Length: 354
Image (cartoon, rainbow, N blue to C red; front, side, top):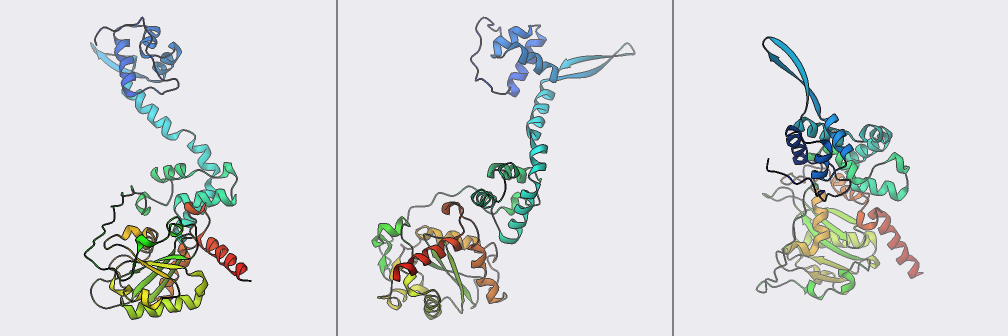
């Protein structure tokens, strides 16, 4: 080790834990015979901190010489750092973990039955005050428990525990004709989600090969309310029939606009709904312009894997996926459930019509 200057105390962030390199430095200086005070001054610690570190990191070793066994104690920086890491891992966990067992059990149940994400469960618990503060943990701690394999829920089960990919800028694709009015003409109030009644529409297929039923999905932009209908095929007639069914079921007054992609199944949508609501079309190959609907289609895939036949499943079971989705608390809604938000908006419309 090069000669060190002990006259000037090293500037060091207060409260920062010792690093592996600093422990190795302590060991090297101890082996050179420097005092605790000089070592502390060089690293930027108090002398007592160095004393405590050496005491905690000292191990007993055995040495044989001339047939005799002797024991001696020495500071081991590797052992000291591993001991520190284990202590940090277990820090406060036993006490806190025991006091929140009921909360964790309810989370596991909600995850298994209703696909609640850790953040959705924590957020709703806070919002509804269903647990006292000392009876629950924050989202970060809940993820930590999952990382440490303390729960039945594993990281592999968390389908959204990945980094979010940056969306590509939509291509205008000027050579491809839109079926109707462009999304570029959609009002700012729709973009900002200030107004209720603006939907995004898409289809979700099961098997790629062959002719079978598909899912028609509609997502209300403001409340994230989901509607799912099983339709006979990915064609204009099936879409038109289902749309009319949905409008009759929910009432035409809640629909202000629908945004669709340029799939051939939506080619007649603007004509069918002319005078009843606005229809906007996204740019070709720009699924991010229906981001809410695309995100919801990803949630549907938790229940219907790609390539899985839709016709092999019960129609009511498939359409009830929307019920599960509408009961998932959303951070964007301050952990309100889409069903609750949707019903509130419908009540406002009803009261304004009276």
